[in-house]
Image (tube, rainbow, N blue to C red; front, side, top):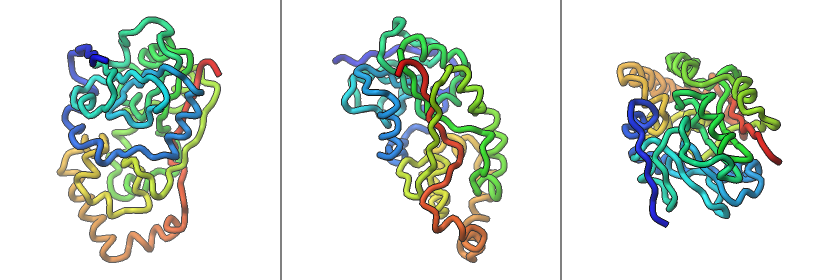
Length: 258
């Protein structure tokens, strides 16, 4: 099928991911455990629109998927044949065009969250949104001990879970504790593998790390490097080393038809 592309003008998620999206697919490898949860939430949908699709992570293989993203850099990494360059707030589809809509760790980038969620509900009969609750505790030790600037940045971008649930009129909220060997290199993925945060390639695949200036991030990473070398990090976080997963506030929110 011929690739379809719709143009979107102006700053926003497109500009951010045109900059940080290069090489994204190599670090952000879909984790099968999260994939299974998302597939279950989609309820066997035959047609799916993936809004903020990026490189296509977590799309069901047995469905006809249309990928939507405002960033051409991200769409170029997407392997599917149906791609539309557009923002979530103005989806170029008719009402009820899809069995289901999915949005994975993207709603915090949308300029108008409520309008975007309204569009998901308009074009599909079932919606599954994977997001993070900024009000959840505990927070990641990287934030608390090394980069408190992340807290302020995330609070400005992420909408509290309760508001997302209300806007979607959701009927189900599923927690997803992050496994210690999670393959999708989001900001929290390396909670038990602290040395990974020292890798600039890993940090570049996290929009939060990539947004903060090097003058903030690099001194913090030098402190982490020193703490790892001295054993101070391990002494503070010995309790984490035996845990298989930690709930850091990630949730799959499901709405619409069962």
